[in-house]
Length: 372
Image (tube, one colour):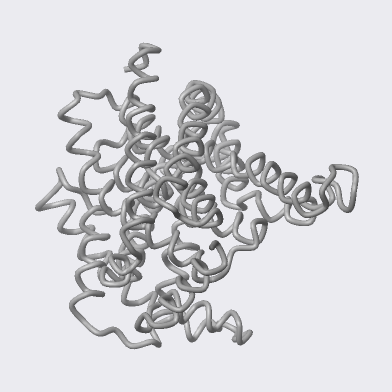
């Protein structure tokens, strides 16, 4: 039955129209190299739209903010205009690498003391939201008859860090490309919703800057959406949400190890047969530590010891926030709404249930702990 379901999903995936994700997967399979010249057109488009979004968000719609305007502008352009394939490499690069660079720049405006206190304060909420995400995902995955791999990918994408966590877990559970595509599309749909509704809900619930930052950092899936929603609510909320999200991102390491050990035991029957969990996961462990988290901490350390002057620190912070807008425009430019809706109701239903539970648990734990 599981094999038939995966075969049906693969046929549906192959039948869908061309999309940025399919082009990336094809290029990866063909081993095509991405050059700087191939990145330039897409990056230029993202930069130009980001300038417009920054200007509108600063002078006309400050309550909405540049990040939210940027992602909406990107979505509108991509779904109203047929963009040439030559733009796709630069758009994909901007949505990931420029976002990661912006996070490092934001670290230059923070101190390690602040990072440590925020990460420690969010730990209890984080553990409970991650646990609830996996429990609900596996329970409702069975009810909705979603495949085990797709359930695992949607669960880890919601619990940890969206597409990055899905990419890290996919080779461990031996997921097919179409399963990765389905799960990323599902997670991205709720990322878009979060950017639009979380700031308004935060004001409705009268959350403090720290309270909203903790909620956004633990309940929104992808880093880009966490940052967008956080800074849409306020500068302090954005800083807090960023730290919480980066702390949450590191949780992919123990989660990946658990899945790897479990997979090894299923494959070899007994824990002592074949490769151990450590041997199975060891060669992947170095790739599970995001480089931008390390450099974020380095930037915070340099600021803490006083190597960054106040003007330089403020300048890097502003640059980081602008780069966030560039990255979010690119995220929007990569969003194909037709393809997202073609994912199917069952994966979307699973993603909705898990996302709702995680958001509710985060608020309940905060309220119970008196954190807002």
